[in-house]
Image: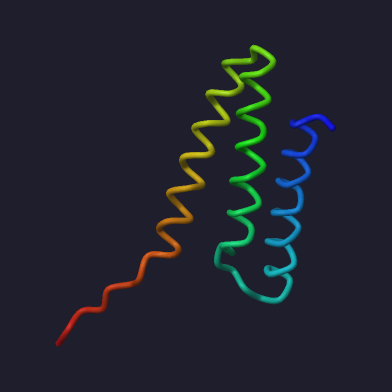
Length: 83
């Protein structure tokens, strides 16, 4: 199976997960969405480099880094101010 097809399928699964949570009234970004998104984009980056699509691979790499930073931010404990 083609890496790009698997990667895009993971992206679609991530968006479906996020959509289901939003239908339940949850407006925050879900970690499962980002995890599926990250794995999907990793496959798109690898596929891009394997097929000499370096421009596309680099742009996907940028989105990979951005999604990774969002995931780190979501999982970082919130500091509360002491009174």
